[in-house]
Structure formats: C-alpha cells, structure tokens
Length: 466
RNA sequence: GGUCCCGUAGCUCAGCUGGAUAGAGCAACUGACUUCUAAUCAGUAGGUCACAGGUUCGAAUCCUGUCGGGAUCACCA
Image (cartoon, rainbow, N blue to C red; front, side, top):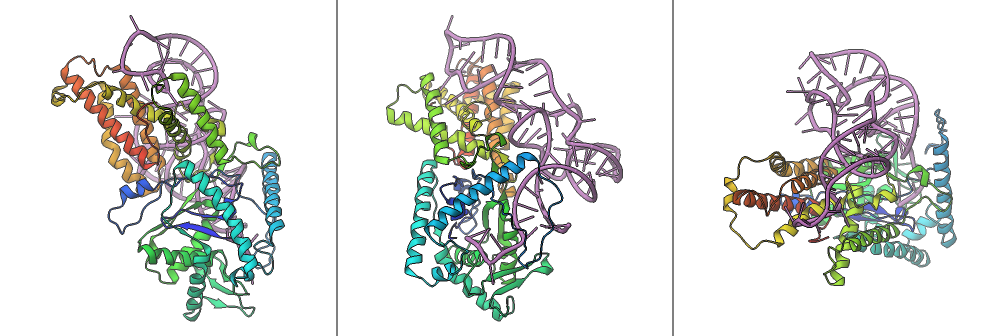
C-alpha cells in the first residue's frame, strides 16, 4: 500500500494508518538542536505508536514454497487469546478493504494502479484521503508537523528505474517468469524480489526510490528510519541493496527500530479490536488534566483561552512523556489508565518543577544577583542540583549518539525530582542571607532553563503556571 | 528450523563504554499545607537482576548455553 515517508526518517504506511491506527510524534526539535551544520541529518526523537501489535498470519509457506517447520514452543493461553484477537482484527480490516475494492495483493490490482487505471486510482486516492484526514486530525492535536511527505506515487517509478539500471550492471537478475531478484545470501540475507513478474513494484522497490529521492532533495549524509522492529529484516535488506547500488549515503542509513507498544493483556478485550484510539486517549487525558487543574485553582485568574492552553500542555506532556520515558528499543506495555496519570514520574511532574521556579521569579523585581558567588558552603541539595545541571550537555550527546530520547526524559525527571526536594527543604526568597537568596535564585533559573530545553527536545511545552 | 530483540520490586521502568549497601514511579502503609504552587516532600515495606556456567581483583552490565516472551524469514505493505 501507499506509504508516506518523512525525509528525516519518520515513515509510515497506510496499513498502520487505518482507522485502527494510532498516533505518534517524532520530535524534530532535538534534531534541530543537534544539527552541526545545515547539511547534516536531523536526528529523530522518539515517537511511539500505540497499536494493537502486529498482525500475524498463519501461513507457513516461505517464498520458495517450502514448508517451514512448526514452532516447537507452544503458546501460553494468554498469547493464544492475543493472537486470536489480532487475527480477528486482521479479518475485519481485510473485509473492509475488500468490500471497497480489490485490495493490494489481489490479482490485477497493482498493475491497474501502476498503469493509471482511472477507476482504481480514484478508489485508491479516496481510501488514502480518509487515512490522511485521520492523520491530520491526530497530528494537529499532538502538535506534530512534517516538512515533507513522499508518496508511493512519487517514488515507485524511480525505484523501478534503479532496478532496471541495476539489472544491466548485474546487481539484479531476472527470472524466466519476468520477476526480478537480488541475491543477498552472501550477506546472510536471502534472495529478495524487487519487481513482480508483471513488472510492478513491491514494497522495497518503493523504499529504494524514496531513499534516492530524499538524498536528491536534501543531500543528507544520514537518514534515520523510525520504524517498528517488525521491519528489521526489511531494512537490513534495503540498506544492503543501497550499498550494492553504490549509493553515496548508503553507509549513513540507520533504522531506529523500536519495540511495539502493547496493551496489558487484561485489556485485550474481545473482537472490538484491542486498540486504543489516540484521539480518544488524548481527550481522556485532557479531561483528567482539566479536572485536576480546576481543583487547584492556580490558574483560575487567567482568561479561559489561556486556561485551556495550559490544560492542553499538561495533557500532552503526560501522554508524550509516558511513552518517551521508555527506551525505544524495548517493547512496552501501554496501560491507558497509567498514561493519564499526572503524578509521579510524569510530564506534569517535570512541568511543575519549572512552574515553581516561574512562580518564585514572578515575585521578584529585577535585582542584583552578584552576591550569589559569596554563598557558601553549599548544602547537599544545592550541590546535587549543580552537579545535575552540568550533566545536561553530556546527556544530550549521549541521547543523540544512542538515538535514545528516553535518556533525556529520565534526566529531566531526575533533575525535577532534585529540584522539588531542594524547593521543599530550603526557602529561596527568605533565605538565610542575601548571598543564599541570590544563589538560589540563579540556581533556580538555571534548572528551569535546562528543564525547558530538555523537554523542548522531546516536543513537550512548559506552561508558566499550572 | 535460520536470523534478530527482550527477561531487573506485585505493576511500569532507570541503571553509559564492568566498580562499593541494585535505583525511581505506581500500588500499600505512616507522616508534612496559617510559610516561595501539596501535580510536592519525608519515611516504612517490597529484588537469588530468568537460570547455569565462564572471563575478571570485581559482573545486572562482557562471553557461552538453557528456559521464557516477542519479531521476522510474502510476487502484503
């Protein structure tokens, strides 16, 4: 099916973008901050997808038609239920698609599409427009924007061209039935089909074209594909092909593979589909944030529009932080109930540390803080804070090097935690003396600054009050 | 069966290139708001870091194996 590919690496397909699909938010802020020069790649920040998990299929035949042995390990009952739930979901999806049109994979479909058959193309575009509308709604709600989309229709021709050229140079080979393949067995990968026998492109052909197009458009030396780990093999093959094609950026291709997000087994209810709708979830966390905010009356004095903005920031912080704090590679259990929490190891907790600083700063006039250097000795909480603040640059570098935004999220949480303790234990405005007051004000400003920047890298905004 | 990922408190997760009594949050229990915002703080309880070997002065961390969970090996995307 058609896929949209964002040039800095976020990639998705309509398969996962159906009404059952979920939301994600790549954060481009970190990428911008890290970009050493305009030609360098933007990295990707974390994003996550809330999904029902991959849909397994029961077919055990390999491409070559040989039977694959059955798994020796038996599945436990819970897994059987999960698999049953998934396959029933798969059937629902398929039946919907098939009731509209002969779906991808059915005979004659791809040729009709690539040949530009008006009816097929119209149907295709209609289906896709529904998907993209759904995307738009959710992305907008999450504050996510993309610089550029690549569509399959933009890229498959280039992919096919490349295959034709590679055919001449012997990288690919054609079978008698007309299908085109590449042999990657010496790279411990299998043989891979790149063109069907009817000459139409397959999934990977389009990714070949897309990579070239992105390089052509932006000249990046590195491309990061943020795609679930179920596609690890696909990208191994893709990158190997690009190397053999001699593409100059081939060494800079990187698959940031993240683990699937799954729901707690207890929530795997029924045939309704074991999914969480991103829009519903967002509405729920907003409701939670509003309730909590109203109880506190801290922002009661603000105009209603500003109050709503604060509530939105809190809600988004809760949701985003909840997903970002987990290492991308790890499969994570997504409990919708917990994702709505506003206390503990959460986005709002970090925001609250920042808000406390702002609250203190609002109470002072611009004043001379030069006495700060005379403050000594530092107490344990102050030393702890200073130490943590100084770690910030290293944490950012590590996060970039490891493609791991969760490092930033965890750092922010720890810094916020240290500040909350400090704030509770020591008075700032009523410090023991002028030096201590000045010092703590500066320290607070530094912490707030770091927290704001850190969270900004994660695509999370700070409110001034909450 | 081949390849790859994962296994740390009841639950969700941190623990960087090996370093001292393995840390948070949630859930449970106990305390702290006439004082800069209690979306907070302090405390109690909770772990044979899946298991077994190996390397090392030293292993949650590195190596091997076993067990358990997951992904993938489509002329689907």
